Image (cartoon, rainbow, N blue to C red; front, side):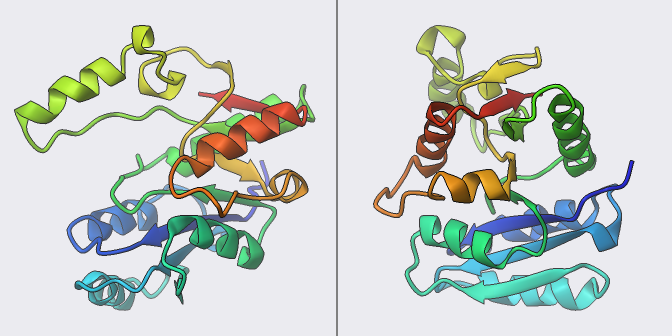
Amino acid sequence: MEYPFISVIIPTYNEEKYVKKCLEHWIDQNYPKDRYEILIFDGLSEDNTLKVIKELTDKNKDANIKVFKNEKRKQVYAFNMGIEVVKGDYFIIFGAHAYSERNFLRKSVETFFKIKEKYDNLAGVGGKVIKIYENEFAKIPSLIYSSPLSGASKFWYSEKGDFTNTVVYALYDKEKVIEVGKFDEEMIVGQDLELNLRLNKSGYLLYFN
């Protein structure tokens, strides 16, 4: 297939502990290097986040990494700022404290266009979250929250691809997201869930792989 150009939007704020590994995984994607960009929107970090990013960028000159200043600090502003400057027609919102599998981008694109062949109103495709614990105590609330009985979203527990009402770290169709008004900047948390529900309400589909 002809691979579309994808923009990966990553908001950061005091992420020196995690951002290096996050970016290393994005740099190492098995997707054509000239077909995606990594856009970082930093909310005025007070630690060594920007220093870590610069060191990594200097060592990986072929990686298409750009850093922007998010003076409003909240990550929802980073999301919408990113949508305004993305180079292509598709984008991914990703967390600086998360790590992508090496085939994450390729699988997201392949799934999106496979489903889109039958459903032109597809707006986004997301994958499964695999939890990593820093200590044993952290497992308890996470396991409870991730159970289907808790009402958790499919990306926490499901092993079966299907349409769903919300996705995480999703590949989105930029045009459809702009059409419904982008992310709600009045929300401090839960902006992705709210956007997904608004896409559903507007008749667009989301798919979990």
